[in-house]
Structures are given as structure tokens and as C-alpha cells.
Length: 301
Image 1: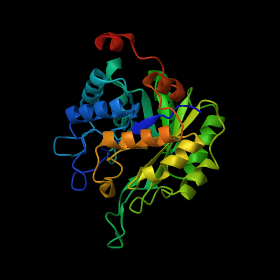
Image 2: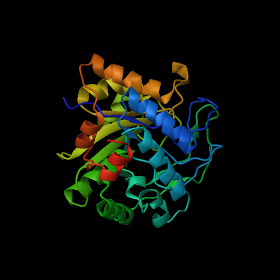
Image 3: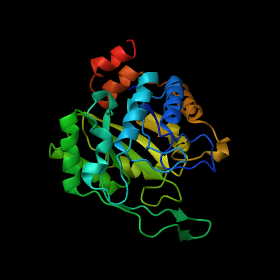
Image 4: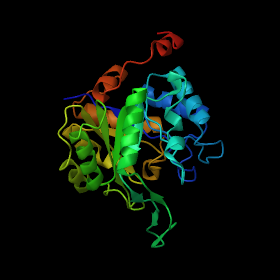
């Protein structure tokens, strides 16, 4: 079976009330990600944050964080776009269009549909907000594919629902996706209603419509839910896993660090007899081109 790629989602937009191990600054993210890489992670998806945890969607923040991570480890970079409210596409793309190739990521992450993003509060039976809408139309998808092609980035295609997965299949069938790609099934907990539930039934609903494509790897994460509850099944089915305190604080597991969560996934895989992908294997599995020569020189390779 293909070696398991372990991804880490270290911070997303999470604060620290439930788990104090959420990294915010570029330095904190780089140190945390390096520890995750040592534990077996080979790809990271992070959000730019300020020192007090507020979103920081500046191109400079992402460039700084990418460089710091690459100084410490060989993990593949799939950071968020600058998806602030009302941001035009050009501004959203700022994290991936840096002039310095070493400041660019390996993937261009894109959400393949539209969604109401207001979080649900089950305890008080109400929505926390009422105006959070995420819009990604077909024209936006095509512009993102063009950007990925221009900068040599591997498309990282996130799907919340079967409708999004079918949209990905349509773009693949039309030949619009440049080269190999990654499909991420984002499952959701009780607070995150836009996504299929983080259950085996929720995952299998996606898999029924998984595009049959030789250059498409699939990876599963769970926002506001514990993806580790599905880890054994994902490993058995041949998928890959992304985990992190950015998605879920894991208070029931004692508020672990991101590296400890990665170690847990690695242990599940080894128990099932599935190898953990090395950075070079992850590049091959996920369709990432060879790193820039100057990057290797900078790290003394």
C-alpha cells in the first residue's frame, strides 16, 4: 500500500482557551511544524496569525513563515490563501505569488464551492454569527488553476460536501486541473455544519464520488471534530490523514501538542502495517515538483 502522508493543521483560526498549544507567530509555527516533521508529518496547512492570535493575511507574514519552516525541515507547504471577508482574488493569492521562489508554498489550496460558514453553538442552540458566507464560483476556480499552472504549484482541492467533490471531478474531466492534484475531504463536527459529519458515513458519502484519476491523492481532516476516531479506517482504505489542534483542541485527549497528534496517527499506521511517507515519498505521492536548488543549498543539502 502507498505510504501514509501525515498532514498537520497547527492553528487554523483557533484561539488558546481550549488548548494552549496553538502556534500563532511565524517563529512559533516554524518550531511547532519542525517538531511535527520529526514525528512523521510531511505536509502542513497553516494560517497567518499575529502575536495575539488575530488573522494576518499579509504576503509578508506568509513569506516569513514559509522561509522559517524551510530553514528547519523539509515539510511540504500548503498554507491558507488570504481568505479575508470581501478580499478580491488578487489579494487572496498574495501568500502564493511571492517574488522569491523560496517564499512560495508547494501547493495552492482552494475551496471548491460555496458555503455558509457561521458556526453553530449546540449548547445554546443558536448560530454564533449570521453573515459568514464563503463564495468560490467556477470563474474563481479557473483563475486559481491558472495561478497554480503559472507558479508550478500542485492544486490542493478542499471539499466539504459531495457537491464540491463532484465539482472537482468535473474540472478533472474537463482537463482544467494542471497536473497531479490532492483532494482533501474536510469533515465537520457539531459546530461546523457546512461539511459532511466527521463519521464513517460522512466519509463514505464522499468516497462514493471520488474521481477515478491516477494523479489524485486524497487526504481527510475534521474541523471541530476528532479525525483520530476515523484514523484506522482511513489508513485501511488507502487515504491520508491531516490532524492538528487548529481543527480540534482534543481536550478529551489531554490537550496534546500537534507533534503528539502526529505521533498518534503514525502509531495507528504502523499498527496496521502501513509505512509512513518520507518527505521525498510525499512529494511523489502528492505530485510536488523537486524543490528549488537554492533551497537545498540554503539548508546545506
